[in-house]
Image: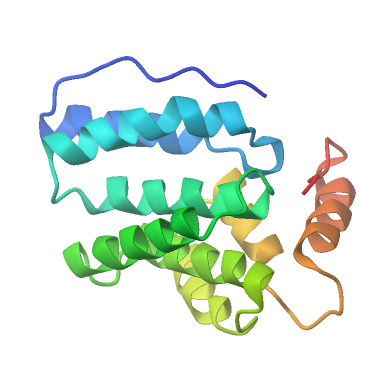
Length: 172
């Protein structure tokens, strides 16, 4: 799936919020491509530059960094650490932010690709999905959360998405 960058908007609170909502709607994890990252990251960088206190922009930037790891488009440590830093910044700016919790949870899921604690993601993802609207991003987070099933992240996503959506499954 190829996404296009959202149109540029002024940085008033509602316009920035609308643009963030548009970016979030374009994050479809099981169809995420390298080109999606290359399209959306500059938009998030611009929003952050215009309003560095916008916690949701930091959280979304963290989420797309984690997706780069989880979808195996980037194996580097730099993107992983940038994602962690962005998630932590989102939570410092807006303690208890559901999107910030989701970002940190997905970072911990991505860390399992490096031998990270599979249980670290659970509490963050559970807090996030309890207060977020049901969309492809929150459903993906629930699927991606390690559960001690013996299946790796990619296998869980493939099985669950194929069973629940009968659409393209995660290929990671």
